[in-house]
Length: 351
Image 1 (tube, rainbow, N blue to C red):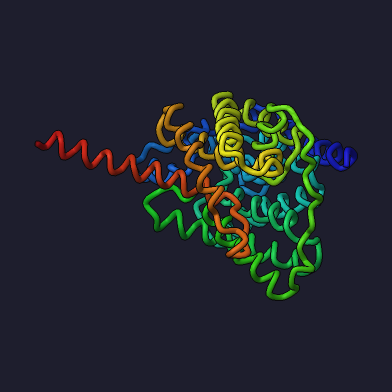
Image 2: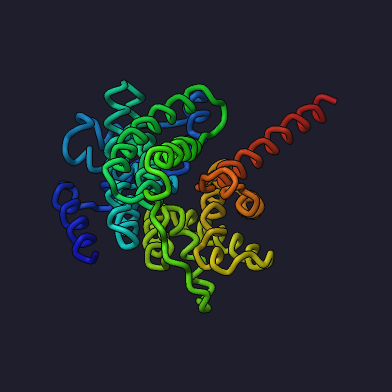
């Protein structure tokens, strides 16, 4: 596994002419590329100069393509930074080389599909069409055996997720976040079970209930965003966030802490707590809400909302995992409350 991680780093280092220098790989400030960027772009607030300045040549030169692929991985946590994406990929590979392959396939298929379909070039450059396929590829190799059927579903699913991403972003007036990944992956898992039955599922070993440190659990919570229930993967994710945006790294840790503490307070299953199940959606929504409205309090309240959504998600009844649905739902709930608040404030001012 160490050799795979080292090889990945060396190959990407060699391909990029900037040798993965953080400043060369970074482009836009991340606050401008949150999923709220649909509204920003419509209002003329989204300045794409930084992207076009670095990527003024064709999208498919080797260096630009590597950056786009890695940005797609970084965008899972709202970062359009290729160095961040590389650290995320290494973190995934530490947990599972197969999942890293799935993530890389998604990161490639997403932007290529988007380009062939004529989708927005600026959005392709900053990795918008990469992160949902990245999550789909990672999830597929977490839940399903690496059989031929699985690989076929990954390819089809990544293409579908790219089109769903574009469709939702063009026609919905609110951030879509990872909703395309959630919907397409649910369908993919149901199709896999319909064709191959339960035999295609990967049976993961039970989690030890031996006590582990609180920081370990919190880092596992961040790692679970991409299905990596180990502290080292979580550490790679936090470092990747920090080199792009230190505030987002802090919010990811705080969100995971809130979810974990509430999970312990609710006396939830120790195995789920140790896996970081109550941390990953909370970490995601903490960053997303801070991008929507710069308030740590709102971010942490949104993190708390993910807990009941995770606890009560009917996975066993529906035969599908929760994935990042609690994050998406919690974010939408908070944004809806914010819109209702604006309506009441306008009425008050009018009165």
